[in-house]
Length: 254
Ligand code: UDP
Image (cartoon, rainbow, N blue to C red; front, top):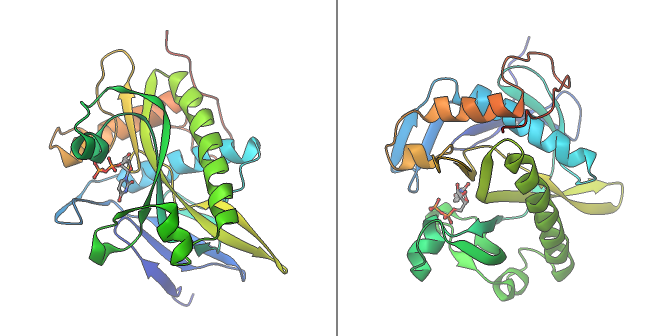
């Protein structure tokens, strides 16, 4: 078998050429980074968990009509995805103050926000992903006004759906980051959800104890990172299920 062509290597994932034109294979690494990759570690099994969690979340979103790049999971660490042109924005949706919002605006972590808030960051490592406005996005042609409208509408639907999904398993969705891509179908283009949704890209707090079940455990040296990710997977009902697409829904936590 000839080696696959590597298309892109990021901090936590690798993209390989897919089996058919217009497809890619997304490989989830165990590598974990924070603070502009100044803090690094290899957390054994993290990639496997994120592959499963992202598969589950993308599949459920697809079922409610959110277009995504996800096709199917291939194995423990890989999923088949549609090749898209990534829009260079990190779209953050917040329900509760935390992280950079708390720091920037002096709002205590854990303060519920008066309404869900969407922020855009320009994806650029050299510039440390700066916060940008719609003026910058349209002015510099990173996305069109129509694309921003589509992104906002999708981000709100994703937030509403995931907030409910996680609440049902005793987890508060504090905030999360998503990325979108342009999917070309003949001469038509549409904006679809891309990248991943996992505890690497969300803040997830246990509703009863307030315990963090996400990457903040790594950022803040709290320990038990993969254990927390595994607990998220377990509550979603996907942990010991090796068959793709065979889902047992989330288990209600009393
Ligand atoms: N986030 C991410 N990738 C990034 C920056 C942020 O996935 O490069 C996620 C982060 O995990 C959190 C949300 O986006 O769930 C908001 O992050 P914030 O702006 O508070 O930044 P941080 O405190 O993580 O630097």
